Structures are given as C-alpha cells and as structure tokens.
Length: 178
Image 1 (cartoon, helix red, strand yellow):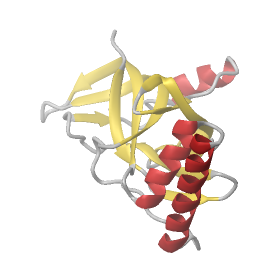
Image 2 (cartoon, rainbow, N blue to C red):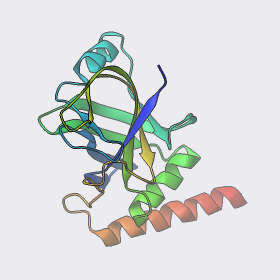
Image 3 (cartoon, helix red, strand yellow):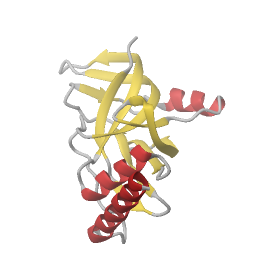
C-alpha cells in the first residue's frame, strides 16, 4: 500500500517559545476534495500502537521526510477529529521559515500522511476511511479539507504575529551574513 496524504487547515496558531501551533489535522465526517471521509475512531489503533512503541507522529514540511521542522507534543482523537498541538523548531532553518510563513498568513494548512488499513464505500460513492496508520502530519500550502484554517489564538493579535515573522526573518538574514 502506498502512503496517502490528506490536507486540512489549522485551527489556531500561537507564538510562545518558538511557534506553537494547534488545530485539527483531520475532521471526522467531512468529505474532502478527494471524496474521502474519515470515520470516528479511524486513528485510534494507530495512535495506541505508536504510544506502545514509544514513537511519535512526525512533523514535516510539505510531506518531505528529509525536512522535519518540529515536534507534535499532542496528537489525539476527540469528537471533532484528529487534534494536534506542537512546536515548530526555530533551531531548524526550514522551521524558522515555516513559522514566518504562518505568522504572515502565507501558510495555513495541515496534511496527514497515512496508509489506509480499512475503508468502505458509502451510498454516495465516497470512500469512508475506517482505520488509518498515521505516519506524519505536515505543514502545507494547500489543504485538502477547506473548512479548517489558521486563526490567531487567544490574546495573540495579528500584529504580534507579523512582528514575530519580522524578527525571525531578521535573525535568518543575520545568520546568512555571519
């Protein structure tokens, strides 16, 4: 079986000690642009297996396994879908770039990389994914599930995010020159 990918948008982004992002990488019961629907509980076995083995879901840039950009500190199913919360690492060049792009509003998507373990067709001809083996959740340009997008969280105003993006860009330039 080939590795598949599904795209979804961020719910929120906050900035504290680097770039902390959180949101739903997948939403149950919603049909995506690929005519797939993820069923409630589709990730449960995979998340349990990863936890039992002491492994983590990877945070990648645009599904590139050569470009990890952070860590997912929390990956769990709830009544809405697959919730993720993690930190983009500013010690990684691509991580600094990703944080700046998120802060500027240029990137707002999440995408899951997975293998289908079990699926059925529903009456509308959609593929209902009932069990998935989750490999990674990536930051991406184009989300497959258009209903979820990045939004500033809590008391972090957009101007503050732009200021963080400016500071990250200045630091990047300083490293490139020095």
